[in-house]
Image 1 (cartoon, one colour):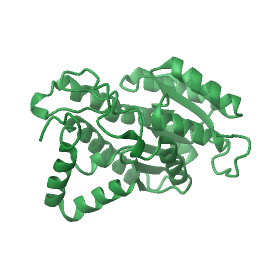
Image 2 (image 1 turned 90 degrees about the horizontal axis):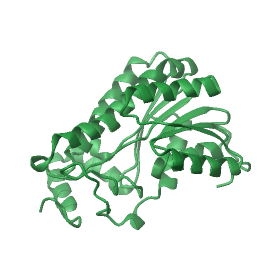
Image 3 (image 1 turned 180 degrees about the horizontal axis):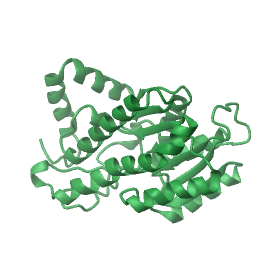
Image 4 (image 1 turned 120 degrees about the horizontal axis):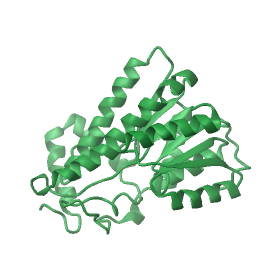
Length: 278
């Protein structure tokens, strides 16, 4: 991706925070916004990966910095916002992208798995948003939650993941309503099944990582394509973004034919290799 030849200047000089920026959609988002002239602050737990990605972006003319951050830790979220203000003096866009998935039947699940998923996905989003809130209100900026269709339709084998995404939806809806007279933009972005690292790091019943993805990643939307769509949705200040035909159909049919969708989703997810249910 070339940074100096971008034709789009909508986000030029805007300060953009991206959590979960060390891989997948987060990494692609950092590159996408940098390509359009934004000043990007990347956050993730893997400092070595952040350093490598920052080097790549800088070598192509982008402006970027990073802070090692575990969004499940309140102190880390606070530090991320403080470091961004120290470095750039403002925050225009906060993209809550950090996330972890899981794959196991609820009856087999160690409760620590759900705690972990909620701590990263929900509490990470809430904490980063809370500390960034005064600056986002001042800039009349954007809060983005990178969520999933799992927040609209419960996915079997993903109790903690679906619960965390539903919680994010409810939280962002409240923020949108509360700030409607203050100019804050709130975007709920649901990429659908996108090629990323999240399935390889998904937690199984005992809390260990799954390791191998149960899906054909090559047939999914790329992280770069998802990031481009999210970028455009931020520029246009959209309320909601649902990507992929499968994702859009899932949300629509669940709204119109919920009982039918329960059966369809069950059968679809049961076809995954080594599915925990049949």
